[in-house]
Image (tube, rainbow, N blue to C red; front, side):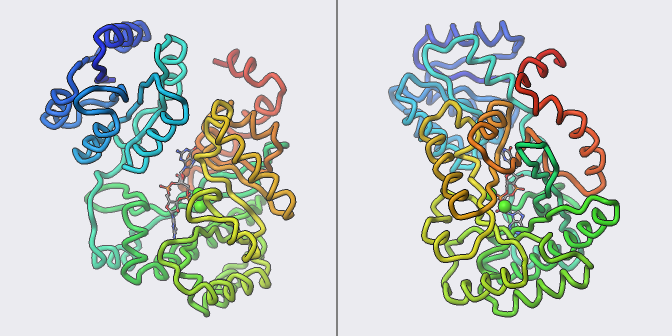
Length: 407
Ligand code: C2E
Ligand code: CA
Ligand code: CA
């Protein structure tokens, strides 16, 4: 892995570079002057896979630097280094994520070999490497893609934390672009919403999901199948009937379908949305409040809409064991779900620490890379077999020791 380390303190630079080499990373370049670092990153063409960046630098501070990284379209991973208070560093990480940078975490000064190892141990190959390059598409091309069947579903498992049982999947849409490769939803959902294409997209995702749900039933594994629904679809009054028909036509019991909803900035007709969601629940279709805890998913919605599942956003899940603020929000959300009789799901479960904490605090379901990545229907059975083998270890009280032994 090609690593680029930027810090104005020569001593810190030498120390971290040395520690990285001891971890087996030989290709470490260092830079003391942020402006030179930017010039370098602008000139080189995507060979740097990881940037480690000090937040306090004279001249250009780390926050400014992050903004420039985003402007340059830097597609590698990023780790922030700082001596500041934990909350400031976490805010900086969020900011970098909001710029769509691939943030892998933060290191506190003085950096220790253990903390480096922990971060780099968890570092998977950069997602950017397999994604299609960030590119803007127009509505016409997207409409064509929907019509041509270029959209495909992938499924990410949800499992019960207490028993390890596989209870369902979340459907996530991908655009298999004939020239650009796999395009992720963050590059076309908004486009669809803004150009009146979201209903066509939802219909396409939903019908494929129901077909696959039916296939799982036939194979003897009936599971919940969740589909993401844009709030915009919830304002078309014929939506509940459309969904009910689709479910019946596919031969899937209504209660196996779950609709995951996030409030969008585009929602303007609250009354219509309330009408629609209430009728959806009357038809016994599940309704889940997605990204709970974020700006678009609020307490008022919880009060006003008949949700039966609450999904805690991944920013309050991953790493909550080390972040007292996230943990407080996580536990409060779970408490609320419990009191309201809702099923709770934690998204973004990325490691054993996340998994163990969620078991302790009594969350119902887990979803995330630690359990399984989103995958095509065809490989799900293979994943299931692997999960059944891993499950007993993850339910043991000494899971960390057993996992260590298994390497
Ligand atoms: P979401 O509903 O919050 O979906 C979860 C996202 O988190 C997915 O990204 C998933 O791949 C990712 N993820 C899952 N586990 C982990 C983990 O352990 N760590 C991290 N860091 N990420 C994880 P994806 O597939 O890129 O989808 C992004 C968003 O696009 C979704 O966020 C959803 O809001 C939207 N979306 C996806 N499919 C559809 C769709 O069919 N219709 C609509 N309206 N929106 C969709
Ligand atoms: Ca979702
Ligand atoms: Ca979510």
